[in-house]
Length: 262
Ligand SMILES: O=C(CO)[C@H](O)[C@H](O)COP(=O)(O)O
Image 1 (tube, rainbow, N blue to C red):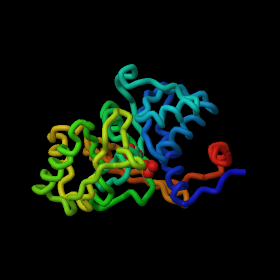
Image 2: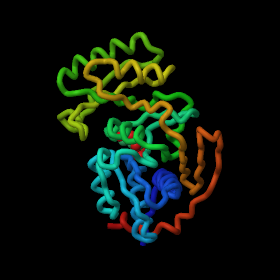
Image 3: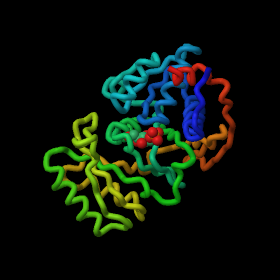
């Protein structure tokens, strides 16, 4: 029997399921990280198994690489794949211009490199991720471990002159130790509450010595697929200026849900 999903997981699933319809035979795909992206990888695996879809995936984290292999997806590194047709990834927040905060799962560096190396980026998100203004979700900034306290102090100093509401910065922890990214770096989370000028902030943060990348994705996302708990999906295309609404039936996905019973 299929496991019963919570409304939020249904919302994530329907967004992922709809986004996978954009994938065509022969595509090179960037595979995002997080719980919504994990649904997308499972849905892709289903198409690989059932339709014989031929794709190669460039994962944005070791977690996604492992799941993709389990789902029967051929995995490549970005340097082997070089340029990608499409990246599908989750987000922590998106605004009306489809600018994003990402990195809640700590994979923002690979995610930004992979998305930027793609002709197109589709974000999949439950409806709760939509915001009028970015910043309620803490903004992740990846820093090198060497001198991280200096980098954090410089970040805090830089924030004083910028249009943000909060200025607290905290080192992301994994139990007693700092959280370490796949690239061996640390994450400093910025509790800004409201970001007045996300474009400026993204540029300024990356000028600070020790900062590798920040979780603001500006002008990178082309389409957002927004999932709702009742099966409704909204598709917003920033280039076409279009919005569409559809409905996804859960009954099609029994064998994906079956994984959750184990
Ligand atoms: O940016 C990310 C990981 O670095 C994720 O895409 C983001 O945190 C959303 O995660 P979820 O789909 O689990 O809500």
